[in-house]
Image 1 (tube, helix red, strand yellow):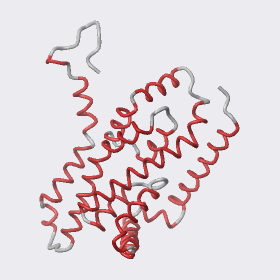
Image 2 (tube, rainbow, N blue to C red):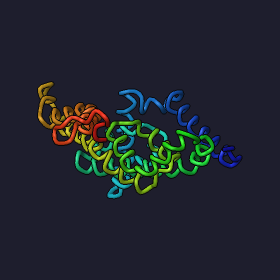
Image 3 (cartoon, rainbow, N blue to C red):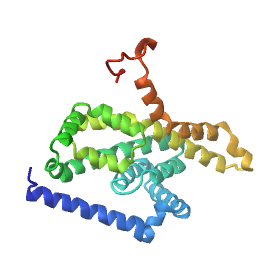
Image 4 (cartoon, rainbow, N blue to C red):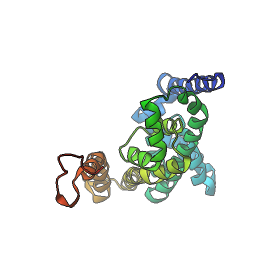
Length: 246
């Protein structure tokens, strides 16, 4: 299937956007705000001043900044900033709203700029995979979110497939909730401990250890889910002539 000129131009526009984002992130001082420890501290301080100036609208302003920021920038620094600025409860809410909004907007942009171009190359097996992704969109997105698939990459890549927006939205909604909550609670608890820090022993409190352990365990969740899916029903091994339950 030939690629239409308008789809090619859209794809070129997306590449230009990605190139500018990469240049800013890796080749300018602004990128240090996301790539270095000192830069991330400065990012939190700047965002804190900005949202405080917004008064009661501060949480909403932060959610908008988060949503727009993750169109091209890593999500984790924004998540940490939200928890450090607002605390673990309000921070979790702001981070979650911003992440879902940013992921949804990225999907829409991916659908507009990438879908037409991708269709020109989806033939044979690739076309079959695209069709199956459309049929099982929620499961595909949910599992990829749980599996810590790169946030920005999945946002735009999903838009280039047949996956329906509703499936993508709810798969993202439920798929990122555990990670956003764990990371937000971890940094939110750090914020509370820092206010009365007495020594390294303070870092061994359950409020810090539990989110940290959950964060580490979440990286093993994909393997656990795979084992559960492969486990034969009723404890019986799969028959020799067929495969186990999917």
